[in-house]
Length: 209
Length: 209
Length: 209
Image (tube, rainbow over all chains, first blue to last red; front, side, top):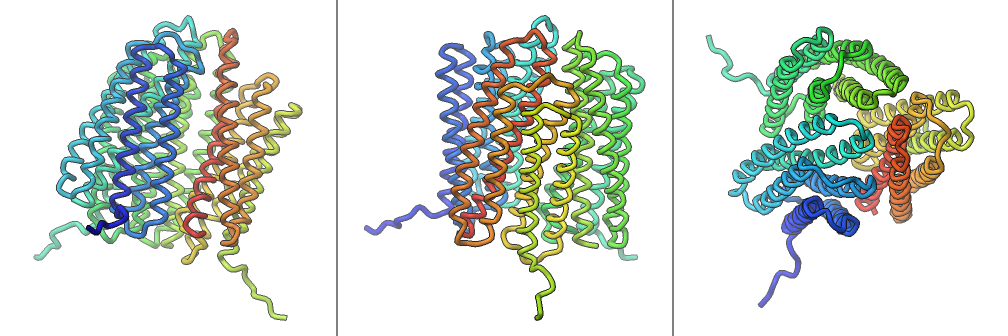
């Protein structure tokens, strides 16, 4: 039986988006596990860095595909924004993990665990939205997923603000304050970028629904 | 008498831009009043945060309108950039106010007052530019307004730099140094984003004049 | 003999890009010389600031040219991205130099010298890529130059990370730690933006090769 020999190009974009989202979720789970167990930090950071490089490769493939394709499933600009926003999430996750290693920080606080938990949840929502992009009938579902991502970003923001306040309650070790402030910022930026993903997805859903 | 039943779509964009600019000015004035009086900081931050949410809603409406409209008064990209830059100004104003609350800072310095003052002036200039976008004959005026916004951004930059130098003159309380450095940065970023607004406006004026 | 009286518009873009790149290289060399000699810091910062203003003017000319031109040598968006990314490199170089002055820092560390050295190398690679944009036959060469810029960005990242770790090894003078952390960040951002330039160049090369 004859089979069409190539994956149609639309399909390729969706596959790459799903791959990027899955990779981002893995990085988020790696960060959470690293923070929860606090064992073999160096090995865990190496794994997350590996995922970050993998994310770069996928983003690269999306951009190369974009340059080669005339008819795209949705606006070229939105494809580029979506690819870059997911890549940024993974980058911030890696930066947070890496900073813990570079700064040789002490055991993570409860707030760090809460933030890691929200990052995983937000990443999982983004991953959920990707297959919903494939069919017009699922675009309403995309909007619901975006609402949930925005809710998680707000939750992360509240934890971040209380983590900062808590950090400055005890300023005897200022180096510790500065290190953790940066780590919290990276973690909060990861959820911020999930919200950027949601903004792009919402635009796509509104344009095509 | 017959009346045209809908606001034409071009009109809608200008109305939303003016609304966003007005909202941004209110946030700037709120920050200035909070810093000048230094009373009921929590209540004032709540009001500014309310304005920041209002700004999100307006930006959202602009983007939704953009997705629904085929013929726009100027380039779609410029509309999106303008909406987001004004939203960013309001965000940075809110972030500066919020940081003062989170960090429970002491009484604001003279430099903080100067920065708040420049932010109000820059926001007022941006607000002034919005109705000037409506008519081609006013576009020359837009360019003059942009020059004034750039001048204010340079002034803010000078105050910011001297505020930083002053801050590091006394490093006995490093927590104080770190907190105020962040607040100054947020305030300086607010004027930076006013300059981004001016850049977009200048582009629009040059393209359509 | 008759000579065509105007530089064709395509030519103009390439000239401005080359001018911007050359200006950026000069700023990078200025930073390196300032850090290497550590003499007349104020005068050297003034020179770099002058170059930064010059960079603004060139970027402005590119954007004005873009608004006046219907047929551009490559995508309008890429022209804008390229102009802004080179401008950002110069901005971060100036910000790093300026921070050393504002903060009245002590003699630069070995790591600062290494970073300045990489910034010069990355800027020189960007400068090399600009004339390669002029001819389709040179676009393969552009891709090689991009690989080299990426390699330099990775090298800068490694130096940056070890500089941060080194900085927090001795936290008796926290003001010093904070000041240098910011300076290192600005320097690292300069190489980051060279990578942004490389990303745009790669896109252009892939689209037109």
